[in-house]
Each structure stands twice: as C-alpha cells, then as structure tokens.
Length: 94
Image 1 (cartoon, rainbow, N blue to C red):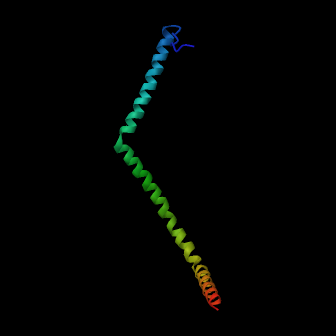
Image 2 (image 1 turned 135 degrees about the horizontal axis):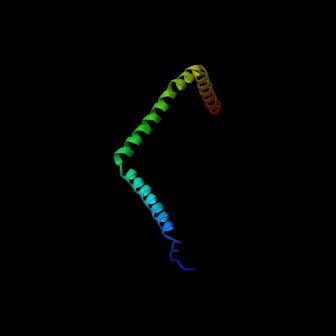
Image 3 (image 1 turned 30 degrees about the vertical axis):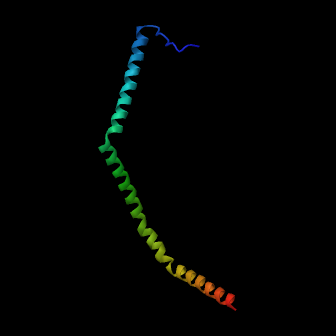
C-alpha cells in the first residue's frame, strides 16, 4: 500500500477538490481568528458569568423564604440535639 495521492479523473473533479479545500481553509481561518479575538472571548465570558450570577441571585429570595418558614423547626431540632448532648454528658459522668 502506498500513500500516493489519487489523481483526479478530470479537470472538473480537480476544480471541485480545490473549491472544497478553499472552503475548509476559509472555515479554519475563521476559527483561528475567533480564537485570537481575546476581546470578544472576554466579553462572551463576562456575559456568561453575568447571566449565571443573575440566575443565582434570583434564587436567593426563595431560599430565604424557605429558611424563614422552617426556622422554628430548625431551632427545635438544634435544641433537642443540645439537650441530648447535655444528657449524654451527664449520664457518662455518673
């Protein structure tokens, strides 16, 4: 098996291959330009982070509301745990 290029069947096939190669080269050049556009990439990152921060902050009121609704239950649970801890401590000292 050799790595020799296959010769095109005719001038039309050669032109089609040249056109395809030009299109691929153009796409590659566009991708390289996009990667080197630091300002645009930084702006895209800022926009993404801003949206993520807005989403996170929009959830805060709901979380606070849930915490307020369950505040009494949390206080009771902590009180029970403290009482159990004190009881165990007293029991082990006897």
